[in-house]
Image (cartoon, rainbow, N blue to C red; front, side):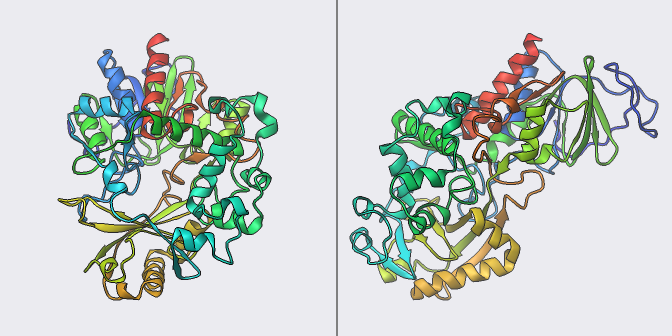
Length: 476
């Protein structure tokens, strides 16, 4: 099966819908039992499951590649991951998917904890944990002063979980707790400066602590704790995680059609017609949409979705994350004696050493990551200017790095038209009203993707959602 872009001349007929636009040709179109929109891991897994049950399936993807938010830079040292990084021991579906696809998994968790812990840099100064605890400008409550800023939200969620059962995070019964995470942090004794330093500078969800629901953070904390309990190992695909979706796509018998952004979907009880921006059209009795909500809001769907589902498509937020990948000409950290990793309150934010060489000691590059408002600030500057400022910022805090860093790649998930951000998150008032609506069927359309799951996240959530929609279609 070729993954090159295909050109189709589609005509009328197939599933009982009328093709409205002229110029589509008069030939009988190739008919599919199902069409999958999006060649990310969720869409590809759904297509594979349907094919295994005997259905004919086509996958339509806007990008000129498969993988969605799995993106490995295989031409750079250590094949740095711009998206999905690794899966824990509890990712049973992910581990099984790799086995079925015939790709090799390697354990990488030990590389994340190798060597000295990430260094803290406040106001340009390196501080040990003890120095931070005694630092005059440490704004945390006395009992929390030894806690590093990056640890603070998860320490507080662990000590005082907002709900006893995190799996109920999106239950309407918890609407009274569907408040800004900033309110939860304030209730734990944090003032505005402590919230800014402990969350806003590098938010896991949202642009800042006021932008994300406490229930969303409860979900994330509970899921992570479950994964930790499952075991300490983390796995990645040997040679780059992109090899997993590529291998699944290569196993499909049907068409994988690249470079075709979708502009419209028409559907009725008989099936659906998909129109792409280039005018090409595809039709099938069943349609699976794995597209992120941020991409789906740019597609006309006739008839429209339910009120809550439409609201979710229109209003659900996507996480701004921007990443700069740097390589080093020399291990400057050996000169100043500090860890290569950094967490700072400055422009470079978080610096994560990549240890994907022949040994754990080898640092193949530095991943510099910005989240939330800072990511948008980077993007506004543009890749070249942002990376120049990142280099200057690191060098100002660590003079031994001067002349030893090279900017190699910049990626913005918020700037990607077909993603809109790294993952979906829900703001105050949304977490107990919208999550379940996004997975509702709309006639012949089933929706999958990580954003449609409420008990799992990441690749595991994407695969779980694919299994759900495959069962919906096969049961129908």
